[in-house]
Amino acid sequence: MCDYCMPLEPFNAEYLAEKKIKNLSFHSYLRKINSATNKPESGTSFMPPLTEPYYRVKRDCPSGHPQWPEGICTKCQPSAITLQPQPFRMVDHVEFANPGLIENLLNFWRQSGSQRVGYLYGRYTEYTEVPLGVKAVVEAIYEPPQINELDGVTLSEWTDEEKVDEMARLCGLQKVGIIWTDLLDAGAGDGSVICKRHIDSYYLSSLEIAFAARLQAQHPKPTKWSDTGRFGSNFVTCVVSGDEKGQIAISAYQVSNSAVEMVRADIVEPSADPTVMLVRSEEEDDGSTSRTRYIPEVFYRRINEYGASVQENAKPSFPVEYLLVTLTHGFPDVPKPAFIASPGFTIENRLALGQEQEHKTVAQRLGVDRNGEVKPEQALQAVSDFHMLCYLNFSLSTMEKVSST
Image (cartoon, rainbow, N blue to C red; front, side, top):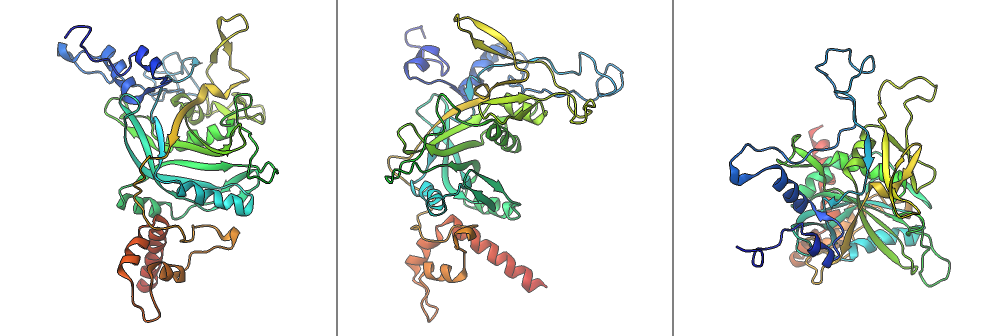
């Protein structure tokens, strides 16, 4: 092939700029760095091209000195960190199987005025709008136990998480992300909401970034291309808030791999100012030196007032934009949801609204009459509901425990 007929690489800068694609897809990024690391045509040995950031002190240092915190050397201490926007994203797009998923979540806010959190269950598939792209298709939103307030949510202990995950697995799904509302009525009487998140404020607060980083750390992505067998995470974070037009809008994000490791290494902590992240001190609250964390030098690059790229010390704080990766989102043109039951079955953990899942509701949805007869067509469609399936699973598990005792 010549230069004119050879296909473009998925990381071609001109093509990405033409299509207005800001971030490389993960597999495009992988192909780019693998082509520079390994040469398959030469037959040389293979080297994993991906390396996860590691900002903690390495254990079992071979230099022979006492283990940290008693001793440390250049081999086991982490290098200085220079923050910069992550050029790739693990997931490119979040697709909600049908608009009813968001409506069910919004109904809680409309009825109570309080915020709500839900976990996204779905699957990952090809996203053709981006070269070698990946999208998360959301089929269900499960709302865990929580305490809802006007300005936030407190998650309670979720004892049935494993059962919900198992039910999702049986349906061919997995936990792909989390979503929460951040809405405040504008008081105009037309359904408009206040725009809190915009270019002059923030998109994800420092507290939310730390929360998303912990969730991504709990859901690592396995891959053979990394020296540790994992790299990053496909876990996504979505926020339902007001846009600049006062309308309710969805935004999708991930935090960078550096952000996940900095939170894991206890290097950063949220600030009272949502637009900045604090770099922690090595001293504890009582003034003593911490024996559990080592804080390396942290820098970030910015464009100054003269248009030059300069390096700034991130201590004591730095902008949260360096830790964020923005995703696109949308709905399919022709919805083909996995669950086809019509809305109506009670959503779990909504006692605050006086709503509770009951066997009576199941019977009504299945079309069971007074004689115990079931309408097969109605029952088959009614069972195609993730919330009902989880409730039936919990009920059967409880009955098994009772019968065994």
